[in-house]
Image (cartoon, rainbow, N blue to C red; front, side):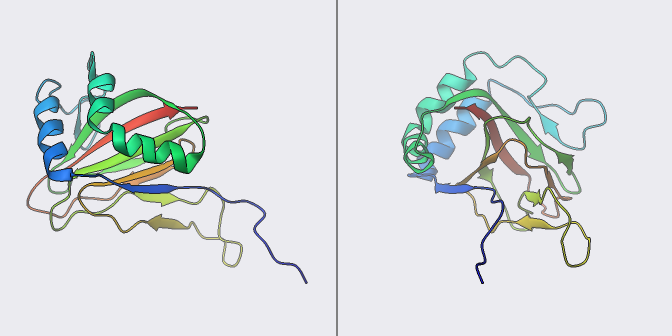
Length: 173
């Protein structure tokens, strides 16, 4: 008998090198791109506002990590868009994806006690009991996670007293 996986969804996790210094640089950079609550969103973000030069400035700060990622993925890529999201107590992000082609990244910039990691939804039902399966990766402040853009994901309600903040981005090959 032969057993294997018919399908597989790749993901990568890369630590942010010298995170304390880079966190300071990123926090200072993001002061130029304030976040706000828009429409029915249950979080604050700067995604719906102009963010000139943010892609280049962000890429310069985390170029070492992007290089490690390029080696792991075994291809070159470019970052299309970068934005930040903050979650106060009870804020959450409903299930969504970033499109069908390319990769999406998350850097956990501030991840205090009580923070919930991003949850990823398996794109098919569990074959044994027909239920939805999701995976919450074990992450800490400074971790970077990369997944295909098509993977639905969400952030459950934030339970911490201090705000959780992430930087997210989309990449194309």
